[in-house]
Length: 517
Image (cartoon, rainbow, N blue to C red):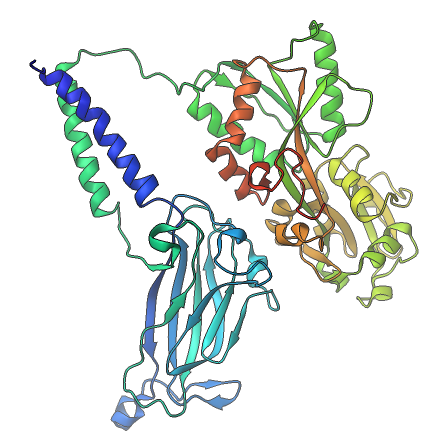
């Protein structure tokens, strides 16, 4: 039986991408932790070469001369195609250290993180952070969450150990591992490819050749079709302002992937969880849908579960969200006990000096009633209590010399108000707070706002982000398609990039709560 050139090209056209996918995602693209030594050089006093050639004075550290100083710059990176979370590191759960770097013949006199990807939280590298320390010749690094292609760089200043006489120092010894990683999961020294690895370049060249051959045997076809899971129509999103950055980015990416889908967003699309739930219930009632049919054109996202009385609103947990207290820098406070937080919101503590801060009146900036961020604060942190009465309807009218409270409508407005008001204290989603340079996040009982802290029951300010539909939307509707998109890898990457954790990564995805809850 003869095989036509067109058939052969079609077979190769299928085989080559399958081979490329197997290589990139199965053989080479699993979990992979890598590092590069980008700089390893000594800094010796060149005065020994003669008085006319002095370049550097003798290097000191904390006023002490270094015998034979050197500088090392290492890049730690996720070199695979899957994100790395704390549970992926090969280390006991109670050990905060994920990577150890040893320098034979040298001791560490200082280190810092000089660069990190934007989605790598800075809280991993603040002074006193668990797992981030130096001991003798070893640098310990924490179990940093690294999305695909994310990295950070560590700069170390070292000095020769007494008794080590070799003229050259051995290379740094980096030890770490990831569960289910490539070639046993051990951290690998990676190489930089400006475009792609050699194997991938060969496969791509073969694919281009096959595609050109197919084109020679195929007449011009229809326009390129959208992915099979794409849907058409218009989707209206509403609800949580804290989750709005995720939804805006996901909506933009979904429209790019599915050209016939339209998700219009305006400045008023996200006005709070309760407002969004009310709008969804009203839209469903206006549609007069019979029982068993759902609205396929609307989704509302809420920080936490709905209230009673809306039986046709159906929940789907999407992510575990972290929130944080934020403060104006002049308050002079970075850590509050849970009791101090409750005393402040109860109105018994009204000046930062009462909690060992600066002598500045406390101004509470709150979200409006119905905000999921505010409701979570009252339920999870204040033990059901609420803030004191509003003293001014306009936050610009707060008396700088007396304590007071005002309310705003969105997370962005709250952060801007706290940054502009000396002594102000507010509450926000963690990702938005971290991106705002003019406010400081407050630790609670010494614990920062981290997913690990919530998992261990140490950090109390978190909530489950829930997507609500009016009834069960049709499987081919744009609402159902967008929910599937958020649960897929691209959607989960967007959720992680904004500081949330996809429910599918938790022990009990349907509950979507920390392990200890």
